[in-house]
Length: 161
View (tube, one colour):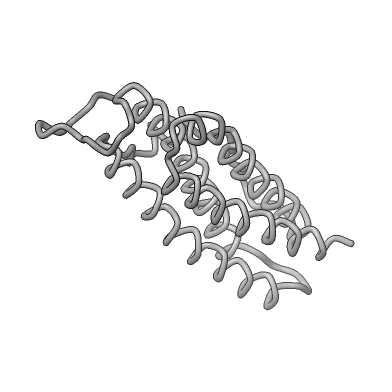
């Protein structure tokens, strides 16, 4: 993505490093939005004996993800770059594959565990550059996102025990 602003960003991080961080955050945004869409889809389409539990759990999860995409996009903007915002961009950037059809409830849970863990891996991959340039706001955002996704993966995985 190209730099957009005319007034230079002068926050103590070089442009090339801000670009690298924004690119990584764009992948995180794409993963988060893809997981949001998958979770919302599963909320609508879950059936079976765990319907009520999963319907409510998935709703809480997609609401949390909806807030997260905004935080990630706003951090990209604060670094001075445009945030991706189209399905085609997300399809190119995301590590989370689409799920065709409507899987059974247990498969939905498994796929959401995989999605939660994929987001954690994407977030974790940004730490070397973020730490190298002392970008504490991004590090804080990544740490918070990882905590949420690791806990959510654990809770989902517990349903399959």
